[in-house]
Image 1 (cartoon, one colour):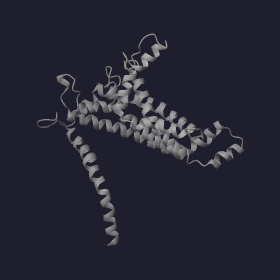
Image 2 (cartoon, helix red, strand yellow):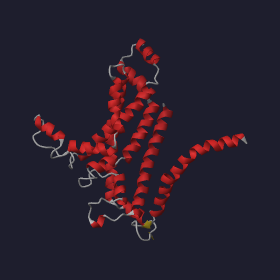
Image 3 (tube, one colour):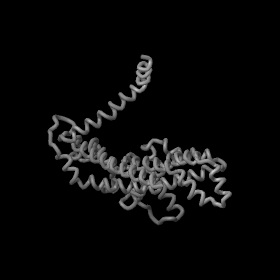
Image 4 (cartoon, helix red, strand yellow):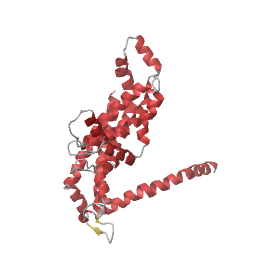
Length: 300
């Protein structure tokens, strides 16, 4: 009786989180799963269309372009942010003066609102009166303004902004892993004649393996899901060059107010189908990475 009472008491603390998960998580997913089989514009009655929405997704070149853009964006973000975070973590793990202040400064971008951060960077990279162009032209580093948010440089610009916002979080996780490596291991290797690079290659990297797997997993998911800063800086433009999957889904549910009358109609039915396919793509990539990393761990 006491055991059952204690169990009920424990679950009562979890009840609010269960309710929030059901209301804000499970119910919206079930709602979207239902309406992906309907032609529903957000008003009036929903018309059952079967698999028509999914068939439309398969031939929607704008969506598949957004998938390709997402892979470019995610790949660039991962290739830059994870090595940079590891290097910063190693440096700031040394006993150098002011390292706590440097850690706080590098971590600061992760707690700044994404929208605020994107607005700041928009003013920096603005093609006409942006701070970066003014600085480069003032010191004669460029002859004319560079269109950082134009066709040629927009993807690179949003990747750099994403790296700035993410590297502090990954650095902190790497620092936690580094501080769990015993100093005795490094001291023993020094006595055996290992230099700093050899210690990093044969001790630090292998012992950071589990932490690195977790960081890469988080980085992949966050990169594939990211769209907020892109929406503020480029809104998927120019000509769809920075349009990513989740931004495309968002626009189907909440079309831009400044768009033409023909594109202001909310497409809940088709948007639900696109969201489902997007979730499947993210899920497949996550499972493949998890399976691959698990096999690599076992082989080691």
